[in-house]
Image 1 (tube, rainbow, N blue to C red):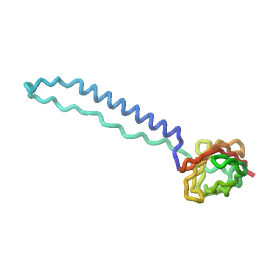
Image 2: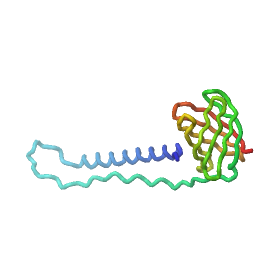
Image 3: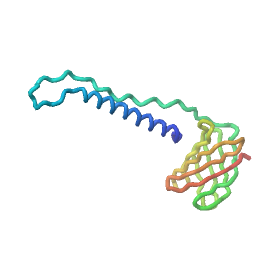
Length: 161
């Protein structure tokens, strides 16, 4: 399963903020050391504890679920690099998803789940390319975008029959 882009961005922003805070603290600590005087003062200052980097925050628990209302066959359109095509996607209660070949688009088999009210699916197509789908849900209609690791992408809309 893939993390939601927003959650990933928040995690990165948090790490950047923490790194800046630790850097400022270390710099302020170094400023309190006496200036080097060529070695005439041979005494060694007492060791100063340097704050350690805090452990990364635990990710917020995410509930991935299967929406029983979406289980079944969803029919609609797919658009992208090869133009528009009719689109059929079958969502199983086990969390598996299968799409049929649609025009020049290769079908894929993989997994699907709901994450914070949004539909996510991923799997490998008939050439072994990873394909990701993400969509909002309105009643029994999915409307969103898809992308593949080979750089192809597009949009899709389908309604459960």
